[in-house]
Length: 278
Image (cartoon, rainbow, N blue to C red; front, side):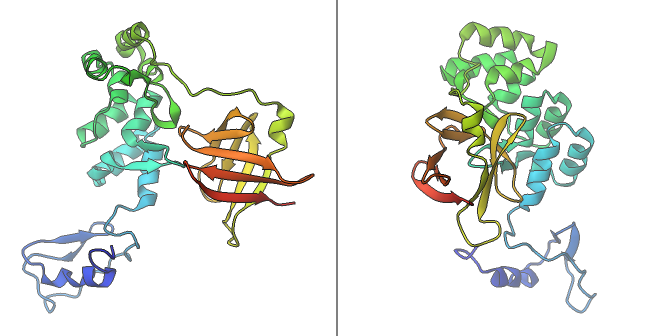
């Protein structure tokens, strides 16, 4: 906010506002219409985050997470904060997802209808899952080839239609007829021994979280930073990978010695180089 107002000066405008009730934090009234400083002591409110007035990121992450199948929690959160219906979360490297996007690729019809009723922005993917054939046809006709666009996590449009069940069966048939709606990023073969040789902790700074952990889970290579979401890696060849849903990002491994390795992350320029701990 430094380009507009400092946090101190922003808070300083609160006493000058009249005729409105200001609600912050957990919905507590800080200033009521017509109130004066002497009328009543101020109501305590939770401390503001450094990102205020942006929505709290942890809340956004939680909302998008529960939108993958927890209808009751989605209802509780979106009825309390309707703007969450439009919030988007980056799972890593630009793999953006909204609550509606989560519902669309998991077949969560009730969740999708709920967040749409609270102002979520409809998408081609939500239309496919909900079986809105006219909408899908109109968008594909208006933008030929759009059916090839991947959704969150790189999941294709046809996947979204298939998880819609019988109500979306006409959309499945249509997308199969036009072709291209099941396009997925290509994956190159990778031997288990090559994969396992990359496992380890790759350090890029002095801080305790300045590292990337490369590991294997269920035979799938993945990468994660402490405290963040693990991203599966897809091999494009030559020990170069991309993280889930973001084929434009490249994570390349190179051997620098008999037993030493390094990795680089590029999008498209290299912005991080990390070396594996011995």
